[in-house]
Every structure is written in structure tokens, then in C-alpha cells.
Length: 498
Image (cartoon, rainbow, N blue to C red; front, side, top):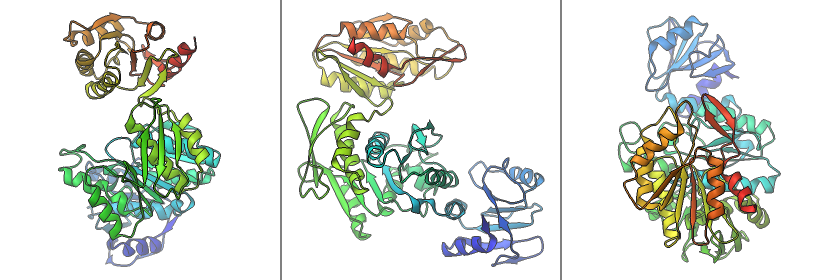
């Protein structure tokens, strides 16, 4: 709950308050006392005790009018509206006001959790899952997670995320729920939009991880320029108590300078000039971490379940962050060995040495990136890809999948992937039409499980198999129903044993 006097004080402290407006007066102080028991930016979810936030590019006065008709008495906005309301609170920035009032409404739940924020153009989700798995072991599963893929507020029950970083009101509600559930740590991805639209305004992270930066999300809807995108990204550095930086990233000097100006300690990882050096070992999933001073006692060998040297660096970032909030080396070693990131280049090895990559790749760019990596790692063997495409949506993806297959694969088995009301063979035919490479052997097998079993059985030591699209999904959408499916990763794991 918040009183109008509390709201006035909070807004004044952040220099956000313009005035209070009642039907008869304009004033700089709360004109009467009232307790608000709810906050909402959804006009369909209001009552007489709600403070309603008029926000968003698509906000229209009719939303406010409907809310008032449903019993609303108070609203807050950047401008007064010609409506009959008991009170209007006018502010200079509605999004910042939402963030400041939300954290107070939920009694500053961030103070009850150790917060790890992760940003970067690539790798955020992987580092988030690595970090959570390590901390799960260190804290006995008292770690909440907010990621692009999934969210958990009790450490064990996951649901799909709507946004990489939730709107501030939802964010603090989730934090409060996590704290009430006994969580002690929260690992969260922080998007550039989270700073662009003030979702994390006023929030300080215990640990901020900056992985990399390259042009992305640039356009009229998100960021007009790369400079704007990078500026928003680096606000995580400015709003963390301790920062972890990849030593070789673009604009490293500027990020280090920003941290120094604010007296924020920095730990780096990467090559031999970093505080912690990452060195690949002979096993494709193993790496060594060595610290210049190793104050965190992390030097040693580790193993992960994801392919690629970049994922070893992601693992290093997770190790450092986890150690800074209390995890020991054994938790780090065990956590990384168990951490499975849904659909993020998970690697399994057949006893004869053949590699099986499991990934959610479902369009041209993601498939091209995955197949290019697999081809680079396996220059001489067969590169066999098993994939399909979803039915009754995103039909344009099919051409892109075929194009990527034609550029890199030697064998393609086209199969079912949530065909819904479409014929899997029809979808496969559309993918095949875009494979403009006669050297690629293409065949169709509607039974995805059978396709995976046969491919793994026949794979030679130098071969690579790519299972693309389904990842760890445990359903197959057919004719409007989500039917049980074991998941590509689980099936591959079982067939390797056989």
C-alpha cells in the first residue's frame, strides 16, 4: 500500500512530480490523504483503490475513461486528461514514476535478494542458466531466474517469459514473490530496452555482467542508432556494485572508464591479459580457468554441456559472478557440468566420437550460425541436419532453413516440427525447394523420433548431427493438440546409450 503523502515524497525525491490536480485545485502537495492498495497500467484491472498509470506508446484516453467508468478515482500521467477523476498526479516521466513507486509498493524486494544482472548482444540466456545452476547447488535451490526463455520465482517451477526484462511493476511483484518464496538470489537478463524505457530505473545490481556488444535491435521501434543501443546497454555497468567484463570486447576501454568514474570494481575474463584467463582443453567441452591473483579460488579445470569456445567464456563469467555472491569452486564445477540451456547448442558425444548438436535454430540466421559452427568443427565428415518447421505460422522461415541447409549440410532429413494442421510432407517440400545444392542428400521422415534414432545409429566418428528446432520441448503440436514428445535432447541421450 502507498499513501498519497508517500507518493508525493517518492516522486519529489526523484524530481518527477509536477502537480496534483483535483476538479477544483492544482497543488504541489497531496490535496487529501488516501491509501492506494493497488497499482496497475492495465485499464481492465482497476478499482477505487487503484493508482492507474497512463503509459505506453499506444495509450489512448478511452482506456482511462473505461477505467474511471469501472470505479477508478486516481490516475498518474505525463499530462492531464479531460475526464472526471477525483485526482490526477502529473509527472515528468511516467515510466520512471512507475519504477520508483513499484519498488516502494512492494517494499523494496531487491534488498532481500542478491541480484545478478546480465547484458550483452549474445550469450545472456546461457550465462543466466549457468549462473542459476551453480547457485542452485550453493544455495540449495534458492535462486530465482528471469530470462528470455523462462522465469522461475521459486527456483524449481518454470513458466515462459513474456519479456527479457519485465515491466517495472511486474518486475518488483516478481521479486517480492521470489523473496516470499524464500529465494536468496535472483539471476536476470537485462535488455537494452529495460534501460531505454526505464524498466530498471533506480535499481542497483550486486553484480553486473557485460558480455559483448555488436549492432542489434536498431530500427525505428527500438534503438535509432548503435550509439543509443550501446548507451542503454552500458547503464548496467553504471548501476552495479561490482562489474564483470569480457576483456576483448569492443569498446572495453569505455566500459572500464565508466566503472572507474563511479568507483565500481571490475573483474575481467578472457585472454592472458585478463584477471581470469580461459583456456580450452583437449576435450571439446572442457576448459581451464586460471586467475592472475585468483582471490576467488577458481583456478582449475571445468566441463560444460554446450559446444563452442564462446560458451566456455560464458561459463567463466558465470563462475566469477557466482563466486562473488557466495558459491565455492565445487558448486561452480558441479553446476557447469549439469547446466543444460534449452536449445542453446547442447552437445552430446556418441562413444565413437560423433558429435550431436541440439539447438532451437528455426530460421535462416540461427540455422546458418549453427551449421557454420558445426562445419568448422567437422571439416571432413558428414554434416547431417534433422529439422522441420512449424505449421500454420511463420511460413517464410521454410525458405531460410532450406537456404542454410544448402550452404553447409551434406545430408538433410526433413521431419515433423509442430506441424499443427499442415501436412509435414508439404512443409518439408517447401524447405527442400529452397535447398539449391544438388550435393545435399535430402529425404523425408515424418517420425522425428525414428529420424533421430537412425541418424545417431549410422553416425561415424568424424560426423556431426544437428537436431534443430525442438530442443528440450516435451510436446509436438499436431492438429491443435500438444501431444507428448520426449524432446530432441532426451531422445539423443537415450539413443547414444543404446
